[in-house]
Length: 506
Image 1 (cartoon, one colour):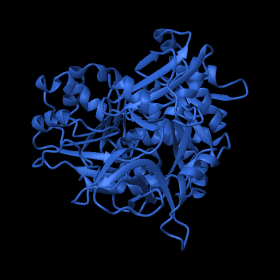
Image 2 (cartoon, one colour):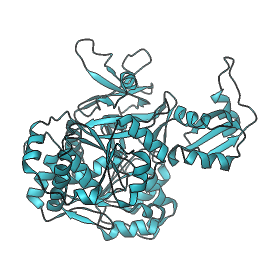
Image 3 (cartoon, helix red, strand yellow):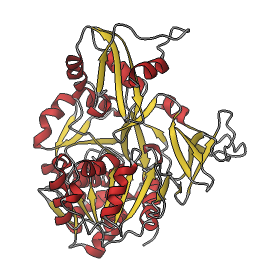
Image 4 (cartoon, one colour):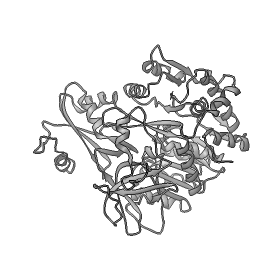
């Protein structure tokens, strides 16, 4: 196959080779490659009648086979998709709609009420089951593909924003095609693999599941979300489906070891486990290594803005490390450190900001030129020609072997439950509650715990209930503490250092 210019070529190529093979299955439905291709083309043909091209079209559904067909259908129509996770508060989904300027949404019967609460009378709400009955319009699909470019957006994933408005990260076809090709080759994945999807479809970990499986002609098994609170049932499901690859968030793997579920059953068919999102605790990794002595374990690093990951480290079983390196750059990506004076950091042990360049870079944030200009900048090491780099805001350092390690954040952004979060966005939400005078959020990296300190009339449980209507669960402080006053610096700002030292360490 020639180098693809559109991710639909992944699907079409696999359907031509292994059409009768299961492409994707969830707990209700399963599609072969032929069925996934046909369903996607039906949806694409229906959407083509809207006349939209290169526009954002959200899908408001739980993840599943039909959702995936919706994604590919949107791409067939010449547009790009966004998963609107129905678990998010309606207020946040409205924010996402506003950022997108979207006037069309795909949903199902289970979520039509939520869609009606977000989209108005002038908007178009499309039913996925109706779209699946549409006749394929070959001429329309051919014309749309003829006008497509590999730099067209493929999807948008939203991350936290310091202004209180979520940022939509644009990822284009070329970025996914280049990354997935390297990703699957680096770890020896093949069409014989069975991928267990853990991540929500609005979280970029799922991108590796979806496009690795579809590009290889492998099988994608969407694990029911309820199993991630039932460790033994989760392992039963993994074993029953003969899973070979798990690209999971650290927290999901730790759920199994926290409850000692590996003593109940060992998923012997799993040959590769790749994890990311948070620092993997050494004691949990040791349990996994002991249970699966022949399995490859890989630590992955990278923010949404660089298409999933930019570095990797294959765990060496002969080494005993308390902290894993984030490793080395994937092929065709450049990862380096800059100091505060924009000079490259190469010395062992010296911290610098992790910066990335290459084709995997996002073109920026949707409808947000100001934030784009801050994060996506000209490489200060290159004054000769245009070269965009992404400044991650993460700090890193090299050890004596040249391995790169993550060492925290340079600003108020944190990593919690696998998500990058702006503390300022949480604080804005709390300040927006009538009856709250002041607040401050602190993150304890060692305990991976988010604290919220506030002055106001509400008790902790009351405020928690209010915040559930404003923020995703992963952004709500696990420890809300009502205080009489907040310590201040000499400049009159809240003294975050004092809060950390005097309260968290108690």
